[in-house]
Image (cartoon, rainbow, N blue to C red; front, side, top):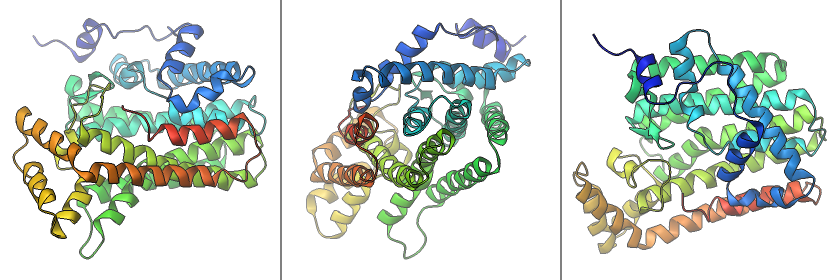
Length: 367
């Protein structure tokens, strides 16, 4: 007799009664500890810091309520990644942007939960497509329950996000739908690769903008809309979100292929092993095509069989030592600088300072 998925989940120590919630102080500390250093300006502000912390704890409760399900398997699978933690960058941006208006409006919390649920759902699907064994330091859903259940769990979370966003009105629903479309197109374009004659670098940036920038942009946009902030701030947050999202993902990709400190359970060089095109590799191929002998030597390691850990480590070390790594960081910083420049129309204050500092932090981190 085989052990049920629900039983395996509970035996692994992840079971939680449907009504259980972490104490607000625990939630606040957990969220705060995982926030990128760029948001430290929030914590240092005597008024905004506590307000953000309180709002994020409330968002956490909304998230748990939204994904709870009377069906034990649906409940366990839906909670899987949320229980594993995460930085909660997207809802944080919604909450932070809401302080440009009235952050106490109930719709702000609901919108913040929508963007995080949407993000969580994409992770379930991404992990299946990438055959990723770990996410946030825990076994991925498909490793526990199999691909079909993991995909359906992602679909279920998408459905819950849709229920929440439908309560926010037609404008929110349209933004969510367009964002969802871009998320799907980004994944599709990454999967099939650039078309004939298309610049691989431009294709890559386009994929990052769709897969990461679009939802981060929507996060800030929701914060402006549902707080009643001045309408002219909406385009500012959209532009900022697109650019900072690309910078964030560029940094992630460089960290992966250069063996930076990894805290998520993901092995350094996973993208290399999976053959996922990232900026350092694309720059390496361009340099090799232009006659750079050192790039050709590194490329030979990158294009070799990387199924063994020693081969993967050698490729990671080689690409880390090559100038394309510094070039990649420079590109990421350019996007971060562009994101900061987009904030110029916002009023001076801790909200603007925190957004600018976050743009810097995403390219200064090591994980």
